[in-house]
Image (tube, rainbow, N blue to C red):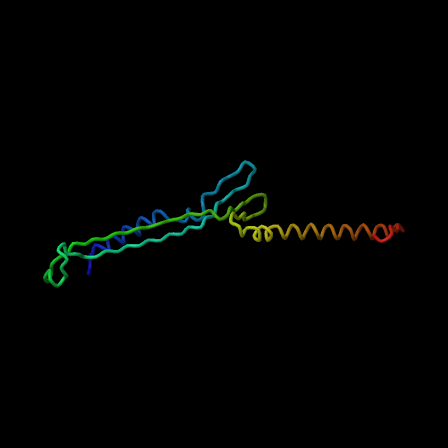
Length: 146
């Protein structure tokens, strides 16, 4: 059935949802900080909608009782919901990119972010200790168990 009222209802809903939910709702506008970093908010956007309707006779009759070719009144409704939840901030600056998460599962993400620098520091400490032992051994210094 071309041009049915439900088609107009659905078109209106989809147009309004498209205007409400855009890419800037997911990845927000960048914010420049005084120290030279750029912070970009990242959000989780969920939305849903429902629409429905029907054609009704005011006296409770059926389409058959109304007769052939009779336009029945249309009654319809729709609803939509949109939620935007911030989940992280992308921090870009000083030669690095960091993802700072907000949710409770962020601890694991933070450990993954910190792991490379932690490993570098440990390697530096181990190699520094090894060089110190070699220098003491070359000088003939015995520290008794070091």
